[in-house]
Length: 156
Image (cartoon, rainbow, N blue to C red; front, side, top):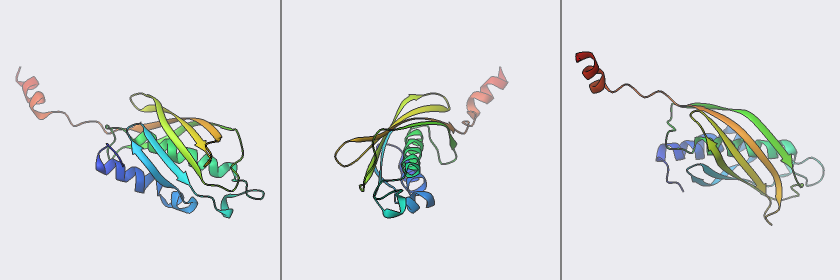
């Protein structure tokens, strides 16, 4: 499923997408690759508003989880890193009516700690239900100083 470190791919799949909240709404990872994650949310009556219309909050949650997963899908990620969403703009383009929805999240800009992720949510026919731009911050642990270079620096 991934070309990333196996521990990070597992963290994304089981710790982010299939977190307790992700399980509550039925999220599942379809694809995990560097800077790109696809997450699926099955249709259930519990996530609707009127009739079979999927609640906007459920779509927003799908967007946030997919963006979080994409932000973590990078070679620098470690199990000790920490992160959070710091901005999310979501535009609803069409209703999700009685169907599974799939979020395709791609990192469009990755900085030292802040990334911008574009998320496209589509129905099974390929109609775009929503588009989002998410800003996410991951704090990567600082690397331990190299003991040989430190020793060499103190000897000079």
